Length: 212
Image (tube, rainbow, N blue to C red; front, side):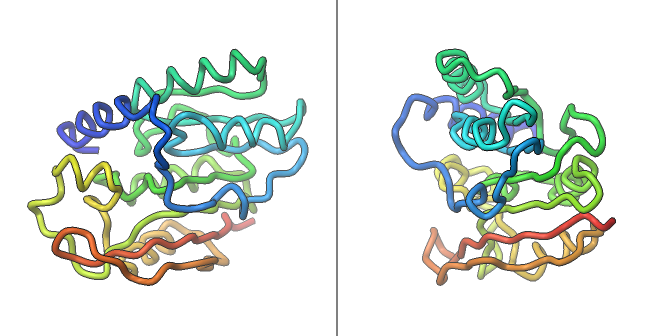
């Protein structure tokens, strides 16, 4: 992730850590369907709502990891986990391009409206592939661009906070996922295009699996 963009994201989302606003563009966790004993990773975990829900669903024999870059979000998530006495969850600060977890740790990886922020999306999807066990699954909700995003928006704080500054077009997004080796790639749901700045974008939820 470019240094300036990373600082902007940290500042913007740390400031929103105590807000009640919605920061997600999808329902990746619902479609991931966590099972007892599984290990799940949430990339861009924010205040930790999905991570704590994963911890509950996978039970004491499972585990949930949240990965985020925003200090304020991580602090809020850790405080909530402590308050609820949740012991099978951990939150770590990391850029998505290089997650500090071992290979093949996860049965599933989820993410909501986060990967579009990354400057090197191929590196993020390479990490998703690395983190998953064989036959592991991902469910990702994100934003893609109908029209190519103008450079003027790439580091714009409002566009970043609205989760579309780094969006790429649909075909490029899906090709990146396929190029990293995933199989059974499927679009679960997709919105109609809507206006953002000078362009149109859409949100979608996709899934796929790491080959056996």
